[in-house]
Length: 259
Image 1 (tube, rainbow, N blue to C red):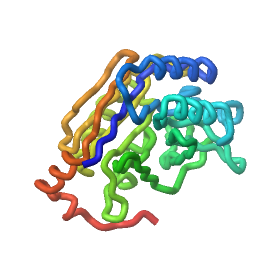
Image 2: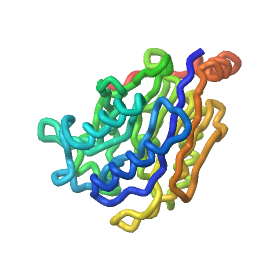
Image 3: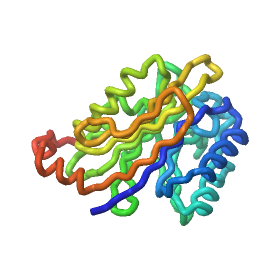
Image 4: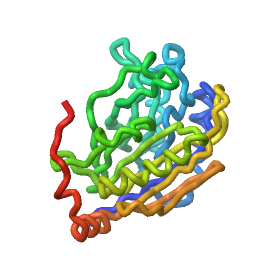
C-alpha cells in the first residue's frame, strides 16, 4: 500500500504580477492546517494565462522556480504548477514538479491552445512525463491536454496511479472540464486531479475553479467551485489496485505508441 496526500490551492491570479501571486501562494501555504505532501497550483500560477511570453518568461534558474525551490524546502513538500519558461530561445508552458531536495522534474504542455494563440507563442512539448512520490506514480498534464485522451492514455509501459491537470479553464466551458476529467478517470482507471483558478483575467474571461478529485470509477470525491480555497485528499493505491483487479478493463486496451 502507498499513500500520498495532495492539497490543491484554488486561487485568483493577479494578471502578470509575479510578486503578488507568489506572495499570495506563500501566505496560503504558510496557513495550511492539514499536513500535506504535494501542493498543486494552477496553470501559469505566477502570471495568469498570458501570451506575453517575451516579457514574462524565466529560465529554470529564475525567480519563480527559485521560489518553488525555497517553498518546497521550507515546508518539506513537493510543490507543482506551470510557469512560462524560456529555453534555447523557445518558450514553453512548463509544468514543474519541485521536490523538497531541490530536484525538479518538468513536463512541457503538448497541446497549445490555438483558440487563444498559444500555438503562436509557445513550443509544444513532445514527451509524456510520469513522476513518482512515496510509491505513487503521477502523470503530469496541462489544461488543453485534457481534450486529447490519446496522449494521456494509460499503457502497459507507462502505467500511473494519478493523472493531474493544472489549468486556467474558463467557467463558460465548465461542463466540458467536469465531464472530461471524469472520462479520463474512467478510461484510465486512475485518480484524476484537476486544479483550476477563479476570478477574471485581463481578457475578461471568468473562472469558477471547479477544482476536483475523481476516483477511478469516475466518482467525484472532492470539488471546490466559485471561491478561493483548498482541497486536501489522500490517495491510496490499494483502492486503485482493487478496482483494476475487480474490473480488469485495462487488460483489453489497444496497444499503441505515439511516434
